Amino acid sequence: MGGRFGELLLLLILALVLFGGERLPGIGKALGSALYEFKKAVNSTPEGQPQNAAQPAQAVAAMAPTRRRKAPARRRKSSR
Figure (tube, rainbow, N blue to C red):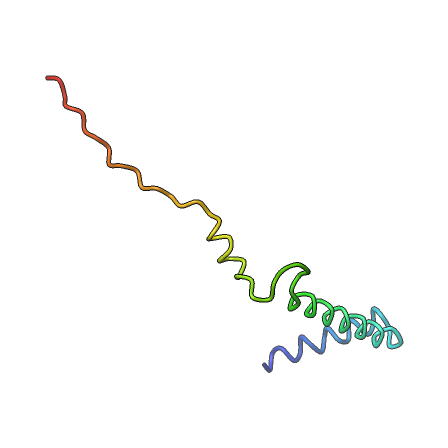
């Protein structure tokens, strides 16, 4: 963690220089609310889908066609 502190400090100083002290709180607030909305959308269920719906991977596996094994190749008798 010691090496990460210097990188974080450099990024904060760079953000302060680029955006200025007056705009940083607004940018932080907008970023925080965007992350909150994203998490809320990810965790909610879509309309029309029941709460106990199967997981997407299970649903796709259930719809996928099953593969049949090919019969072993028959050997032809050689005509000598």
